[in-house]
Length: 168
Image 1: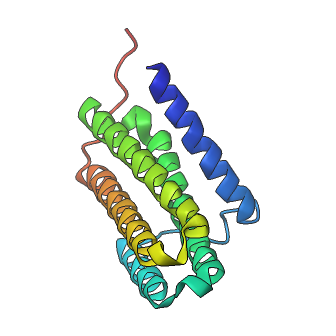
Image 2: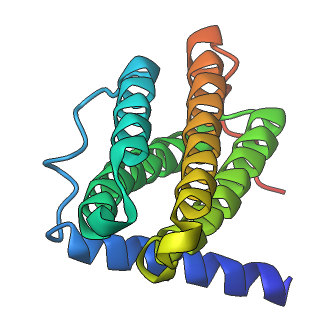
């Protein structure tokens, strides 16, 4: 349990750091309603751009990746907020699924952070491997966000949300 708390604190610290680097506000990067198609398109654009960058364009690659991460972090934060706002209305099963999805998002985000750091430190000889590793980790994070969002929205739409359970 302590290990889980430490991981959660690390994730919060990374999100806060990215938030601070993004100018302290996600309002500009998080539209009112982001669609899964928006995230898929942004992911394609990022991956296409990364493929085109050589090791000599490392700074440009990191800047593009940083912007994409800030956008996705804002979306994750928005999803967490929506889940928190609806927590009392959700069924036990929906809560468990939401918790599992958020944990998967945190794990994937941590992997992306590790690859992002390697974008700065990898040598020119391993540049393609680093780009590939980051791209795969970012794609996995985006897919995990899409899954979590899709499942939460299905819960909302199905009306499976219920009245709060009585206190015991």
